[in-house]
Image 1: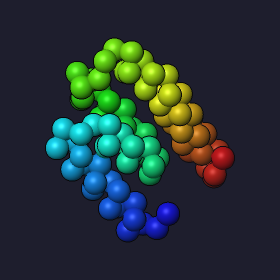
Image 2 (image 1 turned 120 degrees about the vertical axis):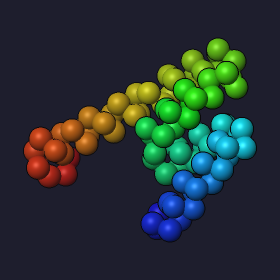
Image 3 (image 1 turned 60 degrees about the vertical axis):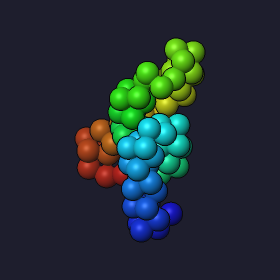
Image 4 (image 1 turned 90 degrees about the vertical axis):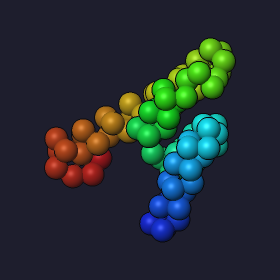
Length: 82
């Protein structure tokens, strides 16, 4: 995905959040791989979802976010790309 396209999707996610449409924001964050922002959005708008929906989202997104964090840390330790 091109940089400008990523920026547009990130901007759309922010607008969806401000418009109280967290599900749409989460879709945008997922599309661009902005896992930290996605988790923050889920946390900020936790009251917008039923507990069962939050659990499904947590089970889906937290492992992905942790995996990406691990990859970043591994790259830093090894000084290259994992």
